[in-house]
Length: 333
Image 1 (cartoon, helix red, strand yellow):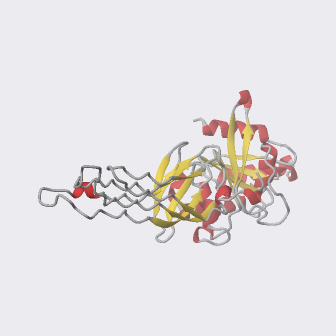
Image 2 (cartoon, helix red, strand yellow):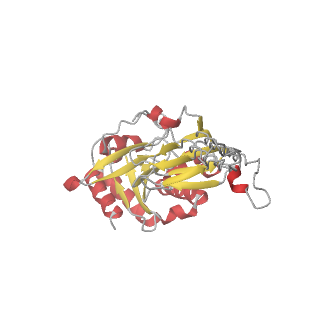
C-alpha cells in the first residue's frame, strides 16, 4: 500500500431515510358503501450502519464518499398494507475505527471486531394508518400519522492502526529502514526528517510460518503531546500497539535522554501507554566498534534503570534475528 493511499481520517455526512406516512383510506367495495378505515402504516426509513471488515486497512474508499444517505420508507396503502422499508446503507470500515460526532467531538463507538455492526443514524419510524385510530366513538377516522423525519449527522471516522508492534522514535531514527528490512513493505526512505507522514504497516515473517504486524509511525518531536509537529495525528496509532519498540540512533548526543523524552511524550498524551511492553533498540550500530559499544553498554546500564535494550543495524543486517526473537517473546508472554 502506498503512502498516498493510506487514509486514516475522514469526515462524512450521513442521513437516514424518513418514515413513510400512514394511509388515510376508507374501505370501499361493491355492495359495501361504508367499510370503515383500512389505511396501512408507513414503512421505516433506512438505517445507516457501520460494519467492521478485517480485510480493510485504510479509510481510502471513503475519501470521496462525503454524503451517504439511506432510502425513504414507502407510504401505507389500502387494505392495511404496510409501506416498504427504506433501503439501508452500510459503511464498511477497518478494525480499529473510532466514530465521533463532528459537532461535539463525542466518541459514539469503536469498531474492533470483524462483522461488528452498529447503527450510526436510525431511520425514521413509519406513521400509523387510520385503521389504528378507530374507536367506538370515532368509527371513521379521517386522519393518519406522518412518518418521522430523517436523522442526520456529520461524523468523523478515525482509524487507530491495529498492529502488534509500534515503532517509536524521533525523525530519522531509522524506523522506515527497519520496517523495509524486516518486512516486504516499501516505505519512503530519505535522509531528511519527516519522510514518513502516514503510518506504514508490514508483516514480519517468523519461524514456523508465524508472523506479526509492525507499524512505522511518523516521527515524534518534543511537545507532540500538545499537538506540535504531527502531534495527535500519529500518537493515536500507538494506542493500539501491544508492544512499543523505541528507536534511538547510536550517534545521538544522549541516548538515555532521547529515550526519556519519547517516554514522557507518551506519558503526557495517555499515561496508560506506559503499561505496554517496551524495548529500546540503538540503531545504526554499524558505526560503532567493539570498544565504543562496550562503553555505551556500561553507560546505558547505569542510566536506563533495567530498561531492556539491544544494538542493531538495519543496513548491515546486524542483530535483526535477535530482535525478532525478542519481539516474539514479548508478544507471547
